[in-house]
Length: 186
Image 1 (tube, rainbow, N blue to C red):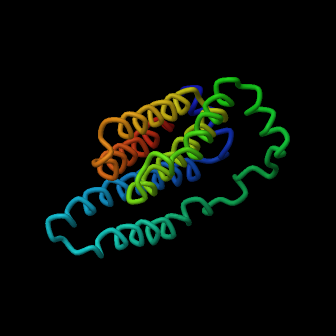
Image 2 (spheres, rainbow, N blue to C red; image 1 turned 180 degrees about the vertical axis):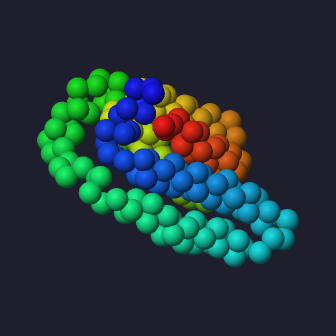
């Protein structure tokens, strides 16, 4: 068993919780990919109702998956680390702190460089990079690598392929969620 698997097992205390998070990551990764494809198909006359339908289908599937997490409530940790301990853990990693500062700066400067039509996709990808950063601080540097990769991808799209931002960031953001689910292996 890898170190990441040990950390995930220690955090969740049970396999159902890990299965739940893997399922959720796969599900929302597929939703991001479908959303990007449906937005692209709207240019060719597909109904615009497909994007919200994919979102609500993923939300409903998430609710259906909740029993996976709640099947063994006694297996969940009784105490969680205090917020001060979590801050100290994140503050103890200079790489995480510097990436968080760059993400915050990137999000603050986005409205000056990105047209309003593409702003939502960049904010969504920035939030995903922050999610990976939190996972990297908690579990493994692999997730920090995901955050750095996503930030570099956003920068490349911003500078070179801005017109394709919803499609590129949607497809590759969804693929990164699926890859994240594959990295959490037990």
